[in-house]
Amino acid sequence: MTQHVTDTVAHEAPASASPRREWWRDAVIYQVYPRSFADSDGDGIGDLPGIRARLPYLKELGVDAVWLSPFYASPQADGGYDVADYRAVDPMFGTLTDAYDLVRDAHALGLRVIVDLVPNHCSDQHEWFKQALREGPGSPLRDRFHFRPGRGADGELPPNDWESIFGGPAWTRVTEPDGTPGEWYLHLFAPEQPDFDWDHPAVHDEFRSILRFWLDLGVDGFRVDVAHGLVKAPGLPDVGHDEQVKLLGTRPVPYFDQDGVHDIYRGWRRILDEYGGERVAVAEAWTPTVERSALYLRPDELHQAFNFDYLGTGWDPAGLREVIDRSLRAVNAVHAPATWVLSNHDVVRHATRLAAGDPARGLRRARAATLLMLGLPGSAYIYQGEELGLPEVVDLPDEVRQDPAFFRTTGQDGTRDGCRVPIPWSGQAPPFGFGPVEGGPSWLPQPADWKDLTVEAQEGDETSTLEFYRRALAIRREHPALGAGRRITWLDVPEGVLAFRRDSERGSFVCTVNFAAEPVTVATPGRLLLAAADVRPGADETVLPGECAVWWAV
Image: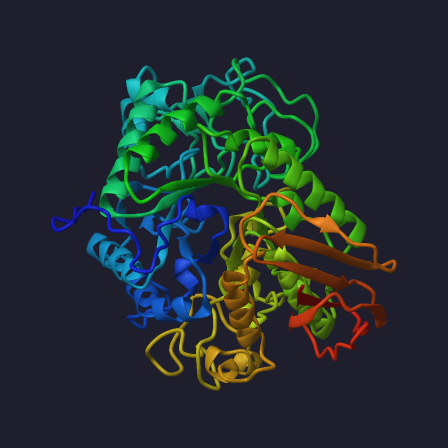
């Protein structure tokens, strides 16, 4: 099933790329969930040609790079994170030529492209796994996965007490070719996602080849899914407690964040450094502390890691100040950039999460949180649709749900469908320009009231969230004290307010955020650049509305 492009060329840097080194240190990276971004053929599912057609929108928005969630050949048991062929595009998304054309067009617009890589597990439809099942016990292919005999008199119990992140045992027993119950295989996620055994050299060889395949096609880097999960503790020991393990937990477990992962990423870094154009890798590493996450960013390992501690901190000035300080200390210790993120394809959208049950307050806080995030030193991630102020869709009917966690009784809460609803582009009724057919399908239904949140409805409206994002990203790119950096200076402000200053040789910048519901009077530090709400600055003092952030040029 592997596809090939015969007209690939050497990597060309984006047309407007700066000659400066290490572009990722201050990049704003936009996450596209391909199923839900733009549908080119009217089947209700987003695809690569649809993304390609919307690249000018992302250029105008002002981002530096696009991260594409998986579009590989997959049975879609977990939204494409169950990969059957790492060198093929799933037909629902297009072809390998479409992927090449997308990368080429993005580079022509000055945009870089990062693709998802899923090395912890594959699909149960991957040829290795299917052959391992066909050949039965003793098959050399089984050594590339975690096949084990069961416990109990007849092997009827799982090999250990590990639980799937999606709930239930992390082991599934297979029926052998002769029809008898046989060995068990490990899957930290859905049963359709068997874990690779990274102790086997063939797994290392395969992923080195996969990296080169996509680098040769021209991609600028990889987001590494479950980067903390590849290596399991020797002997696969029991966890020893019955608490359901979450992706982000503080208790060490024998299958996450094992030290052996770092040798893998050192090898990958050597491959990335062989290629021109500053190719990068970003770790999705759920670790107990930001200090543990920073270990993935040592100079000979990966370039960035998602800051899940920051994402998981609520509307709390003290908590945010603490996680910002800890994050900067941790990444500065390894000379890496900090990253900041508010939403992604796995969490409730922050316009809802920051004020559940109160949409107006949620959007107000979301805009303020965006200015805080974009004002911090380092790189920032934007999830598709947050620039439109999209809320979480919390009332999807059970019959349309597709998140595998939703169908398991003891796992995560299965809410990921609500942030994956296709985004609205234009028109007064679903699918709001998501596809080419008026009134056509979309794989998850959109709320009717999204007619006021479409790109078309917001463009040119200076009060809209879309224009707010465009101005913020333009200022961030232009102001000399914004973007990359290593430190901030906290300022003395009233209780319930955070303010920090950043300095450069060519100017200084202050961000002030009022977390309280009521207005507060603060010192006017300079010229107002941008505010998340209506602010009238005074010469010496300014009244900051409740739940509002302001950028100042000093």
